[in-house]
Each structure stands twice: as C-alpha cells, then as structure tokens.
Length: 213
Image 1 (tube, helix red, strand yellow):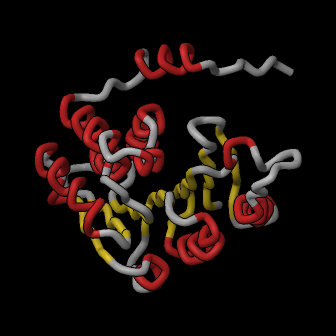
Image 2 (tube, rainbow, N blue to C red; image 1 turned 90 degrees about the horizontal axis):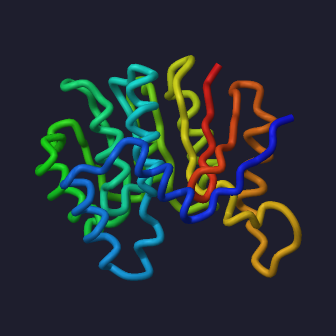
Image 3 (cartoon, one colour; image 1 turned 90 degrees about the vertical axis):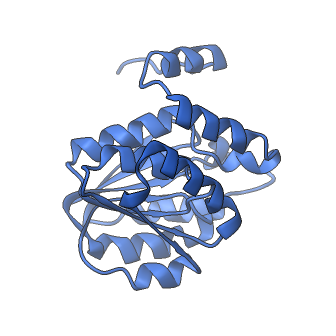
C-alpha cells in the first residue's frame, strides 16, 4: 500500500499552480467572493473547479444540473466543460448571491448555457425533466440524501454525481464537539447503494464522486 501524502498549504498551492490555471474572469469572481467575508468559505476551491471542468469534458456531458450555486464559481467551471449547445440547470434559493455569478457568466460567454432557477431546491429538483449526464451538489448538508435520491433516476448510466464537503473537515471520524451526523449518514447511505460506485476524494473538504451503474 502506498503512503498518503500530507497536503500542506504550500503543497496545495503548488498543485493548483501546476493544474488548470484560473483566467481573469474566474480570478475576479474568486476575489469578489472572498471580499464578502466569512460567507466566502462556501466557495468551491480552485482545484475543485479545475476537476469539475475536466470531469464534465471526460464524461462528454451535454446536460448537467447543479444544486447550490452560491456566487457561480462552480457553475462557471461546469459550463466551460460543456459543448456550445450544452445546458446547465442551476438550482439555488438566493437571488442575491447568484446575481454575482450572472455577471461573470456573461463575461465568460457561458450565460446562454446556464438556466438558473431560484426557489426551494428540493421542490425544483422534483420538477426536473429529461436525463442528465452530470450532477453537482453543494447545498445544505442535511438535504444530501434527498438530493441523491431525486437525482439518481435522472442521471444516465455511466453518468456522474458529485457531492461536496463530505468529509466535514475530518470530523466524520473520531469524537468531536460538533458531530457531522448528516455527512456520516449520507456517506453510509451511498456506500450501501448497489446502483452506484462511490469514491471519496480528499480534495477541498471532501468531494464524493458517484458513478451510476
């Protein structure tokens, strides 16, 4: 068994610098989001964004859905991996945060690929029509099991579902004052589901890749 590399902040910066670089639009969006203060911790990391674009291209996705858009950084990454006639449906409850993303989607020339739907995401997900190639979820964690169950029937065979923050800062193991029961239950739910193959990546706060069989 190979040894596990400890990813220090310095090593993480090296990995990001030697991966897919952020262009001016993405960099400006990240900077504006960080200027919001503490809420910016919800921002997708640069290496996750690069992975989202790459995975979207790898699976040849033409239709994708995102639940939890925030300021639109992850949506920008996914839409850039879609073909010119591709579609990304974004479900979010906040018009305030997503309005930031709209400006950058326009600057990047991908706004015509993105269908933003504001409202309760559980209700919006239930109304989704057609089949999807890829789904990305970064929303309220207690809702993950419901999102998973709603999305699996809507994703094609060999399609991908991705869920962010599934390691809860490492608190899914050991004893902690704030026990992430929602993440533990979700991770166990996926591990026991015979419809999918699951791998948890130690990127960001944990990114779970789910392949529908």
